[in-house]
Every structure is written in structure tokens, then in C-alpha cells.
View 1 (cartoon, rainbow, N blue to C red):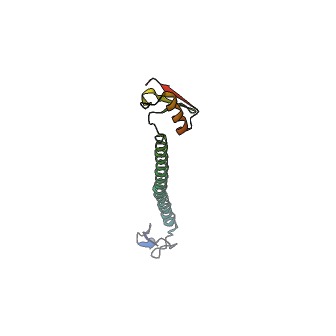
View 2 (cartoon, rainbow, N blue to C red; view 1 turned 90 degrees about the vertical axis):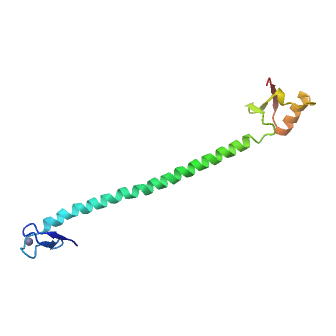
View 3 (cartoon, helix red, strand yellow; view 1 turned 60 degrees about the vertical axis):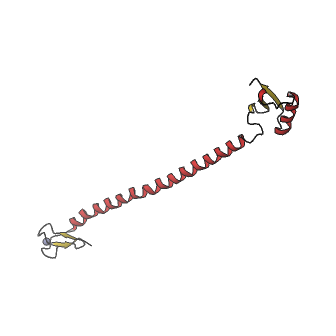
Length: 129
Ligand SMILES: [Zn+2]
């Protein structure tokens, strides 16, 4: 309940009173004038709920990015896992190994068989490097 000035005698009157107790002037118009401001207040509440949604969206994006980064780290970890770091896979079934990576004292054929056994590759190729 709020006090509003009477439009006729400008004395303070309850906005719930239908008529001014001093001059009898109907104050219904004042109640109608007050209600739009209530609507404005309820409209102002809507933007307040948006930061919450943005916060939730932000957390969701943060989690998704975190999961992607974690998966990327896992993928990197498994890609560096093979025994020889110089191994390049151009064909998923074949390994391409630089000739320089063949250990001294081991023939190309023996090294090929060793790589095949260790990695399970179907074929091994030596590259010029
Ligand atoms: Zn009045």
C-alpha cells in the first residue's frame, strides 16, 4: 500500500482507496497509473535471469572446451606412444621409417621384421631421410 497525492485536493490518499477521504474524488485512475510501474518492475526482473543463463552457458562451454582439450591431450599421448618417434604413418597399414633410424649393426630386413613385430604393421617402408 502506498500513499499517492489526490488529483483534486492533492492530499495523500491510499492508492487502495476508491475515493479520496478528504474530498470524495475517485482515485481509481491513480490505481491504474500505479499498475504500469508494477509491470515495469516485473520486466526489470527478466534481464536479471539472463546472467544466470549466460553463466550456465559459460560453464557448459568451459566444460566442453575442457573435455576437448583433455581428449586432444589423450590423442597426443597415444600418437607419441609408438616405440620409434621417427615413424610416420602415411598408410594406416604401412609404416614409413627413415633409413637413418635403422640401428647400426642391424640389416634393413631385420629392422623391418622387428618393427612389424613391435607395432603389428602389415608392411614397413624405408624413406630416404
Ligand atoms: Zn481529495
